[in-house]
Length: 215
Image (cartoon, rainbow, N blue to C red; front, side, top):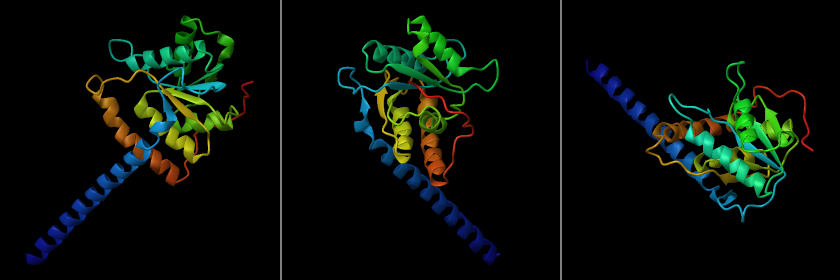
């Protein structure tokens, strides 16, 4: 009986240690990503020019209304193009089937705001942020571009870009309050941890394919 209790206590201590190490690891990764703040711009007048703006996907709709993250990212891309801070827009997202096409949704929203269709390029295999960043370099031949998303997402995207020696900067769309979309912000904790794991184990995009140069 005593031996059983000792084993049970030892297991409990090991479990607590593993949990503490996991929490500590997430905290260190989170802080490391947070250090990329200087690479993110919030003012159109201050952001440097890049030929291409990489517009990262998000679902255009929630259950009963338009996704505010989607709308603010579209508006930000339009603002950068209108101010001539970018000349082309690469819309990157998931096109898993004919009924789910994120790049097409972004294309329609940009066209609706009078962005010329000839300056919009599609990346249909941007399944994850990692895929979107690497494919922008490997498929579309861009090693310097402006990533468009919210602050919390940009930090992770820039962390990935930095690791792959991509000279990217971020321009922040209007930041959404935590209490409006708490699940999105809480999910970011796991997303940053997975980004570190991807880098640690040299995970590559699921799809590459033929190159498409953006002139």
